[in-house]
Length: 378
Ligand SMILES: *Cc1c(COP(=O)(O)O)cnc(C)c1O
Image 1 (spheres, protein in one colour):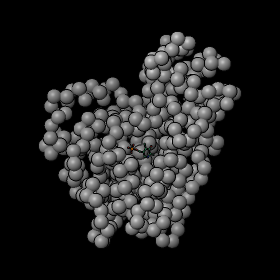
Image 2: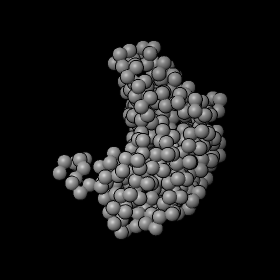
Image 3: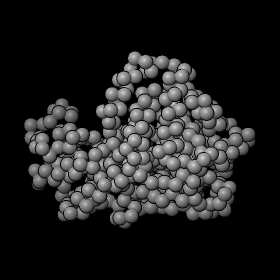
Image 4: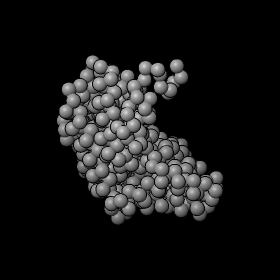
């Protein structure tokens, strides 16, 4: 058997049931053809040119402006960017933003990884970690001695969405992981000091960069930490990233293609109606997915509490009698890919990325395809 090729007993889904586009990954996620066309259009002029020259710096400037506009950032907020994705940003925040002690509301793998980063830092106090089992929501809580509050707005590993509200008073920073939320889940950025993301989820780009929309308080905190005697590696220095971002540059070479795909998607989202439009589109997909799951005897939304169900990453548990791995394999044979559950969650589950690039009609088609496969497997 050749991996990825249909086997002889493969299930063939009738073409009329198939989605127009079979990519439902939670990250990396579907890239729209128009984005790839833009990449091709810049293939001989901007790709393969210096990131210190105007054409690439203009891309960085457009990405910054596009994010501030799409996310409705308050006056005084600015965009900082650097290489390494959200995972690297956890280290940037650990080294450059947490003064002494962080609190983490942890309800899945991604929130837990940031908590592990501050726990491992020898120059910080033991973090205050508020943890609940997967599928539920932990909330931050004002606590003496905590100077940084951190949680994900959307926990991509479980499909739980969290409120974003200030906690801890004026002196504390609110640092929100919006990697899989920014641009599709409503937010009031005035409730945050640092709202960070990587562009390969909602924003349909490729990986490798981190972006953070930051308040003046975050800039001030970073300056205070940088002036202390803490050693901060240059690549993890927020103040260095900020100085470069203000010049529409990055400390070291960025992925230019990632910037092009991002800028094209930001334009598309804003022309279509902005965050409100994007949120409505993802919510429409989510309604289709969750109501379908509730109407099937063998499927159940993993997140029990309806208000916590993510509008962008839907997690659907399957009955023990239906092997999710077999369903996922049959879908893949038919060009429908990446509906795998988060690997460490270890559930008999489908996980569906419903970012704005995904057409709600394709989510509807996906449910019909799952029905078809489950009937044939039985
Ligand atoms: C994907 C994801 C990350 C990690 O992003 P990388 O760019 O791969 O480092 C972090 N947090 C959340 C919520 C994510 O969904």
